[in-house]
Image 1: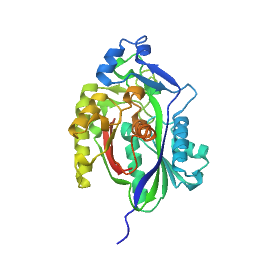
Image 2 (image 1 turned 90 degrees about the horizontal axis):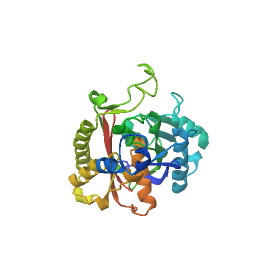
Image 3 (image 1 turned 60 degrees about the vertical axis):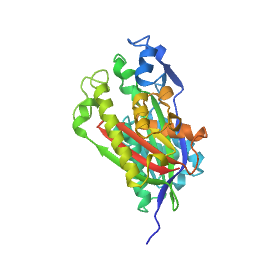
Image 4 (image 1 turned 30 degrees about the horizontal axis):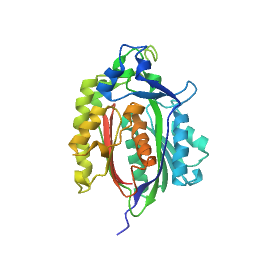
Length: 325
């Protein structure tokens, strides 16, 4: 019987644009307040990409940090996967653009679009390539410039989102790593959270109208809590583990209330939950790797600990990954 191969996180990295937009600043341009935003979301600020910065720029910076942390050269990479819903171009993929800047010519490169679940979808793809032996070292990035598709007059959405990127380097390991990933989707609910614009369906009247994020927040909240409950249970049951076995929950940073609901379902103290939504806002596919890197670099997450990563996003899409760090 052949030895099982795991995909282990060898290094993490992240990048946030310099510009910070506080709740107080937002309240000067839209009918809202710091108190209103904090009570409903837990967000106090978010980062905004500079006019000249692209998703690929953010992804590249996060990638450099992850590669440095892993001690791996770009010439060793077999694959680069970028989870994003705000790519630089229609084509080529943002992953190809990042690959070119890194100088990792020859490695496979592709984008994955699963909205806020994009990083977990990308992580799962990378995990499968490593498990089957077709790759040994994979760079996985979640990166977004969501503020480019925000209607800044819509207080139900403009207060939520921010820009950023996070990355991990996965390496083949015979001892430990990702135990399992679990992915799901329900496209019938698309109009509860979507951007109604595209190439074959048309761009409408431009970014200022149909090309911005539309969301029915209450419906999304209810569906997200149920879906995350289910996928969390699925991950634990698939590995014969219980809630008490978990050391850390690294959730998608969309809303503090959703994070707290998931932690409560797991009987986990909020001290075991990585929370960055207050400082980053919802960075979509970048939020999980951003939170992971923040906790790793602060020394909270240690080698050997059991981590549960989870996310929910437009599509709807949702997923989880259980891993030994």
